[in-house]
Image (cartoon, rainbow, N blue to C red; front, side, top):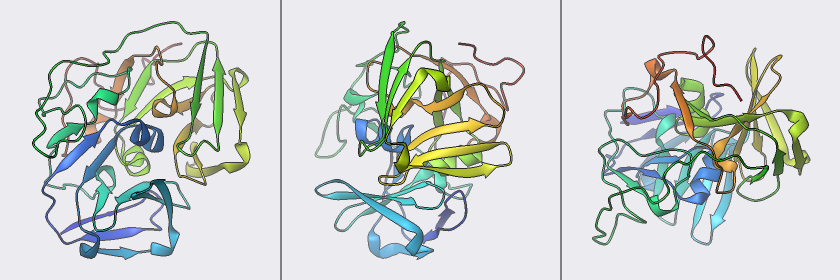
Length: 281
């Protein structure tokens, strides 16, 4: 039996089935919603037992599917259709005993990271006998852009960012995993360089005494991580329109990385914080 929970603990779940796949989805909807990538273990709706179900907000992201998040802390939890309900793998209690079986919708991946594990990749869905692909349809390419635009999945919160932005840092800490549903990928900017509309839809969750996390209360999209007394704000790279002109700079807190995915060697890896050698911008 698999178990897991959201970051604040308001929602717990038990899943008594055996997932036949665990896929990492690179589609634009997953990137905007998670603020990272979508990593899902497949499941059936009838095999879940939920505690705190009244705390789950459901957002209809398409005509046939809904995405479930904790309304209190913003953690991404589920993707469900008429019969299926997949769980965000980062919210699983460890060890899960699972491993990634496929990368899907790779034709739509972000331009700020490479896929450098050995797992099969598929241009879109891996079903119906689709053949795996090779090569990167959108390899990372660092470019100086005068401005960038980002938004949550439903469009309630819009960001117009001018000036430099930091390369993306991927955080594998337990808090990011539970909040995003997978490792969090963050760029950064200064508040004075950000013009935000729809701020009344933004909900802040105090995730520690040193930081808070901002998400859209309508669709649940993960948008911000803000450390106390910092001069910049971390922004989920997944919310940005492509091209971002960014590349990945570091993986941090990999000492606590879960068991269901592997990292390649194209980006420096740190067991803990990058405080001694931060990514500058």
